[in-house]
Length: 287
Ligand code: SF4
Image (cartoon, rainbow, N blue to C red; front, side):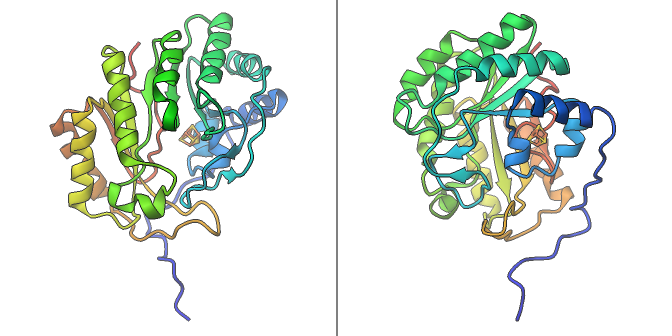
């Protein structure tokens, strides 16, 4: 029987190293009981990032209220927000000497603010410990509570505001069935409108069956919403039951997308097979 997966091309190889700050990062995360999207999403960059002493913290638990088949995060009934989580993350970041912290969360459609208050609490706790710390928030689409969530986030400006469209609208029914492309664009647009001085950012996975024209259209839509920063990476099946990879995009094609995106006006672009929303996030971020 023919396997239904495409073999990895030679460029999908990542050297695994546990050197540098890897063990310190792992130990601190365990000590403070902090979850990361690095682990939950089986990110291929985990060793590299942790060795550099950086990780993306996952707040509000590791159970998502949605069930996107590209993602390996568990879904179901989430746990209540942990009031001690902000303090523990602040201690972790301080201990690891993190100056630029990327914070993300599972979707929390069960909460009246979509989880925005916990983002605020984490940022405030970190600033109390180290006022010079800078932040990038990678937020869910806040479904029906976008306004409410953005009002709350007003209080903790400045930060880079990230929200991922993930794929082209044509693939939403299979890739992001609980999401809405329009809603995601609206969130990015509202954020830019509210905080024109702040950078907004979005990411897309390639290799799920999208066409070049569909990708181009998303890039244009993002620019029309004022999106400043763009990340394009190769989709890699993170777990046994996740969607199959439809295509491996050649690194040279990623480079061409980077050129095209820059020509469209994105101020910062990362486009390579292992690029992920928080990969090299600090580079080129506002000081
Ligand atoms: S790219 Fe982001 S999610 Fe992946 S290991 Fe690095 S910090 Fe974690």
